[in-house]
Length: 364
Image (tube, rainbow, N blue to C red; front, top):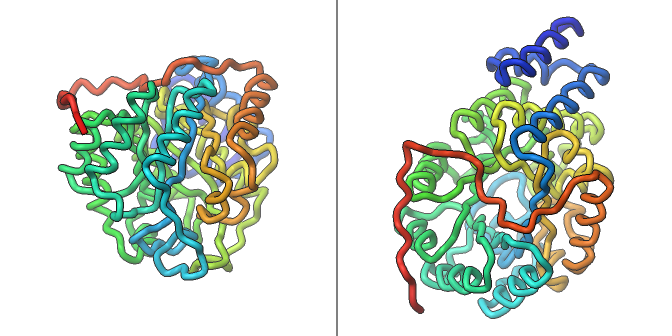
């Protein structure tokens, strides 16, 4: 694509806030630093228009690194026998959640591998207790059945993040050796029908991934009208089958930011985090993402003794207390001239076709 055509597509993006799949492919596949910067600036303006200047903080607790799945890219994969495994006790989880709330963060994110050793009733009790503290609760625990999701919703969980990683069916099948593309999307549909604020996301730079696949991801984000979308670079883990794949970090950073910016413009008011993986790829990665459409930061409050064992990709853990990570995030917000929210930052989406099920009083 010529620079002139790229420029004309940016004008169309500004006016219509939409592009066809083929037009998105053309932008993603065209390296042009000057026009890429114009795309990033446009996304930042649309972010200000649709979600404002606020940056939402969410405190993460990675409470288990056991996983029943064997995804080719993930350090938590079932067959990684070199990884020390752990499970936090419910009392530990609730204690850390209390710390997060006491520090002024209104949302707790409970994240784990797909660990069925936590039965649904126990997870529901943990959710219920965290809600009693006064936090909004986001879950990222993988695939479960409808009754499990319903129990967690009725216990008080507000949001559920279930990343697709790629909407290219062939690529999905290649990197998920024991997963089912259609079942994962069916889980998303169930979550939306129940009433969860639902999240998805993708990885940028996967082996064999083309501009066409990334454009498909963006159009699917738009089509599904997700409340939140996590977009991050693929970082190879040496103890996985994809560990020898080494993308060019600079090109991958630019490509990830382009996908983020286009997603902001096309989805308008979805919440988009400046992901931890971007911070691993580049020291200024998360801050740059906040200038390209992102509006969420998620400091990690997992206790230090577990941090290096939640090793999805290299460089993620650095033996830092949650308070230090929070101070870094708040300093970043100040540098950007933005403001931190004092509310949970629930979805700005409206889903008129959905009728969320009522929550029931839950007693344990």
